[in-house]
Length: 309
Image 1 (tube, rainbow, N blue to C red):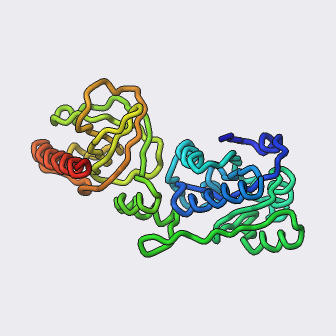
Image 2 (cartoon, rainbow, N blue to C red; image 1 turned 45 degrees about the vertical axis):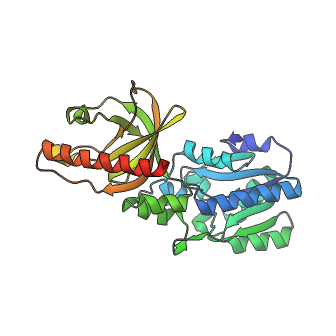
């Protein structure tokens, strides 16, 4: 899969394209449906498939509050690659680009540069200055110019509602990682490098790998997890919190690997959160915390033994 980071790079290819447009934050089940339709349309019509997405997310530039991303850009691209899409244009989004009206965006970007012959978007797609463009704008432009066909993809419904990035963010804030994973179509993942910590876990009898996370959303609590290191996935127990038993501090992401020996410092890891066991809380003493961690570990061991049976 080719990845372009400038519009000029994408313009160098002459073959007409099927183009999906959107933020694709998290690449959840709804996004995957759009990508599947994109690949099918491209194959059926003999076009090259391309996803046009943006970085940073437009809400980070235009929104009043800080919008947290479900995935890093690298994670997003990894998921898109699995769909079979041939190319991605990660369009830099800034104040200047945000002032581009809807029709110049269609004329200059989609038609002239990207050579779009089919455009695929979700039902709630908006674009252009002040979000003035919509699926109606796309359809009217298509009818008038005949430049491209428009394919509007309805949202995916799951667990009593539509799948959306905002819904998944809310679930993660509540620690409901199982349902969030169901809407994503995979467990929620946190990626980063393993760094040296204060060895608190080791002193308690449970040495942990301290992760310097790249992800922006870090649900608090104690989770049954899988730790991906190298090519292997290891059963683990992950803590995300501020260690309230030892006083207020910064947020920590620590993973205790149930069956692993070896030096992990400096290595990259990905942690998949499978189930939250309990919320984070302050204990009366280090000994009380140690006893609770022992109970958490036994629950994690039981969980994985049932998964393998």
